[in-house]
Image (cartoon, rainbow, N blue to C red; front, side, top):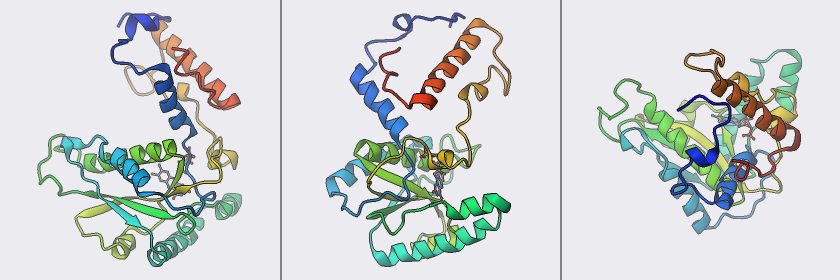
Length: 264
Ligand SMILES: Cc1cc2nc3c(=O)[nH]c(=O)nc-3n(C[C@H](O)[C@H](O)[C@H](O)COP(=O)(O)O)c2cc1C
């Protein structure tokens, strides 16, 4: 591609394959309004057809060698939720000890799960043997199957948001004991344990950001050229960095205003 600070979109975009503005807008809305939900779950049941669509979105995620290593354990019983919640309480107390001073106090006050309040919990797993010992694409980086299951989690998360449902990922759990509670076989890894349900509200910003735990990092500091941490040295790179600063500045001050699909 020719280096230029201002490449016109109509010269580079293939109109044949792009979605309409409204469709693209819906996608960006879903991405920017997705939140990790912990404390705002409503008890209303999730209908089967809605859950089916969300799970289908997860199942159509990309996977290394088309391995589809995931399974989905749907947890609805109070008994199972209670067992997992006990695991969380224990791990959460251990985790608090890993932070010092004021951070420990802040950590203790954060709500980091909605296991009992949400109507449905789902454990997304990765079966490392799903496609035999040699898998296209996993020959050199073994963790690619786990990354694939994470792709399914992200699809699930976004589909849930599009359906008006909140999802919260709970990772403060002893993995071995979670496997025992859910009778997960040895070769299978529990990749994610998530809480799902309708919500009273979606926050505008991540709760950890609002609580002052960590700020949203400037994307312009995280994009480099040709090598790790190598800054822009031509007009294209400088133009991109400038655009990233402008776009993120708007989102951080006003929130996402629905202009990604029309500003191209
Ligand atoms: C792999 C992973 C594990 C996470 N584990 C937890 C968790 O145990 N408890 C929790 O409250 N949030 C958890 N989160 C949610 C993050 O805290 C959250 O995504 C982040 O603060 C940004 O907020 P947002 O998702 O609302 O944009 C996890 C997220 C990911 C991707």
